[in-house]
Image (tube, rainbow, N blue to C red; front, side, top):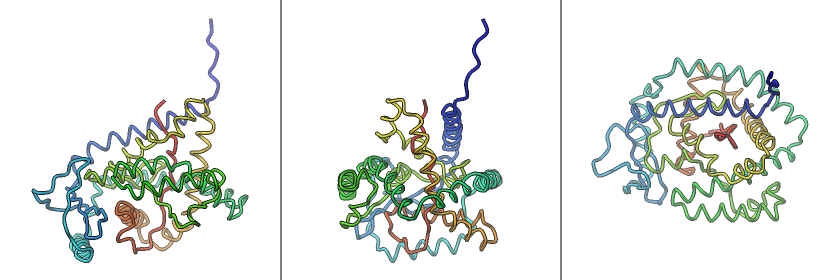
Length: 317
């Protein structure tokens, strides 16, 4: 008997794409940990956790072991001075051994942005007023609160974990499912955490600079964290177990368009004013990631948000 032809299944194709991207991340992580410079994790006098990337020396008293953060009394001014001195002494130390490959992927991403993402983002901003865009962003952010809470706990940030819990409870009820950010109006400010940041706090080095297809600027540590993050998301499990794959795909697409719409004008300005857009984006994305890991410490530089996150629900099936 002749078998019936398979019908087109968009979810199946998305799942295959997820597997391919995730495989790339896992493949590169081996090289990332092998070639990464040592890192030292310290706490400053204010109690904030700081990560010093690309350190050339690590004290024998500092052991980089997951779940263990070495403590070292160091003033913020001393830290800033040491970091600035290192940047000026090593202006070309960008840790980008795969630059030729990264630039090819970067150009591919630029093509995808111009062909698909930017038109979708323009339509999104056209049909939704500013308040509508804020409502969508708030709703998606509230859905991600359990992931933020899990990473707060994994990092031992109990104060931040309590704030995340308060925000989720208030916005899910008084905020009509998160559409309104009532908690922010009450003075409970939002913050973002993911497994990449958690790995950094545990002492795992970032490795080399890596441009992922579609996802953009990253590194092996964050790429693995991006792949594993959905496993902390109860919303993803609920959608999967109730066979609501179309809602999972919609969440992923709308989330990506919403994030890109927020940064596309800044990206265009950066591109128009940069001699080398690739190098400029590489620099600003790494500075921003560094600031996120420090929970906003040393974040005085005007770094716009580069997280257009397409993997809100991406998991192996």
